Image (tube, rainbow over all chains, first blue to last red; front, side):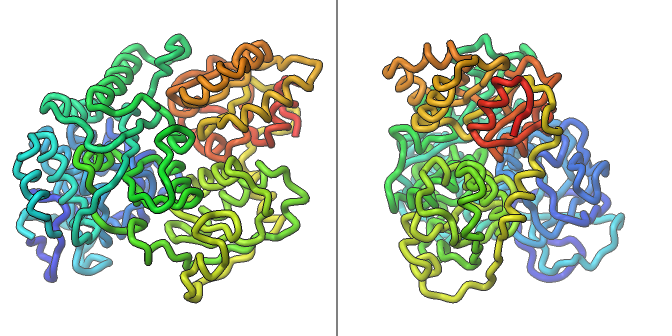
Length: 136
Length: 413
């Protein structure tokens, strides 16, 4: 894995992506918090509500909420409204499953990775290239 | 993550393309959660029948097309349609069609048509110590806490992968050490005198979820006569305000005969005291309309109503000289609906204004025709989710207050 941040990355779902980094200010629940039709954060209680995540490299310390998040992420990937990649501070099997299912069903990839350090030593909006390989 | 020879063969397609696909997902999930091996489960409960978009149906059809079937007894959670009373569905035609197709696709895999969020009220109820793969937050917390079966928090996709293979990654609450309570929540012992038992259960659940997050709490101070119905309501609320998948209640749940049993003899990291005022405030926040507000409906059975809850409702309705002037929707499972029929209660309840809803639930799909007035419930989960899901303005009260309000046609608490 290379995302211009050194250390040991963990790959939860493989793939390559490029995009601008979007660091969320709080954990997000994809179910009820992410609109798969528009790729926008819709949780009214989330500090980044209204932010468009489609095509961005989405980073958050951890996920929260319903285990139906895997369906919402997979549906967003199918529709092209998902983030280009997801970087987490802590591993999440639910999001990993959503990305793996979209890959298996549609051949569409949304790499999901766990960063070696949190917070990320990069600024919001910086351009990142992500190459997450399946080799573990 | 290391696979046995048999599991490697399954991953390589030895038991078909469906099982191989399921193994790939389990391996990916298992690595993410840091599991070292896969272990067998004796049952699964699938929460894949609610339609989240085309991906829901595409996923299940991958298994149907591969000719796969579930490897263990598998129950199904609610769907978008009441297949027994399809005329109740008031949503868009396309959603109705896709929702039905999704439910039927799961049956083609050999899942049982329970369509209930309370599989613990059916013949699929697990036993103490069973390793199972259950989805649906209220079912998970009930299985772990009230029965003492062992499941992690499973959800969409991975639940079906577990059912197809009969395997799960060994992690989380499957492991005895992880079931130790690390947080003590002490409830004011006087609360049982001031609140109706079903209100106290919901209030305790709301606070438990908020305080515990995803930790395992041990609860003290709850009345010794709390029933399984109350513990069901407590768990459902705790799994709505937090991610509680297991709670211990000393003297009430099977892994907590004593406080020390719940903590496995180790000190807790935190103690939180919950006062009567805090319990009352948690309940008050569920109601967003004033007393006296006009009612459109009462909704009960979130999670699905048990036969003992129906007995209490029937008693209240038969004791009243007046008939409710708004419908009382009651969500329940097919098994319980059959038992009502057998006892001759169905006609009595319907004559008293009850509309039975099976296979689905009044907060996940479009059933309520009239939302112009408030909707009242004795379910913390319904009160929390209905405003966002179906746009209802909610009032919360005990079962007795719900029936009284239905008769008055207005919120009366």
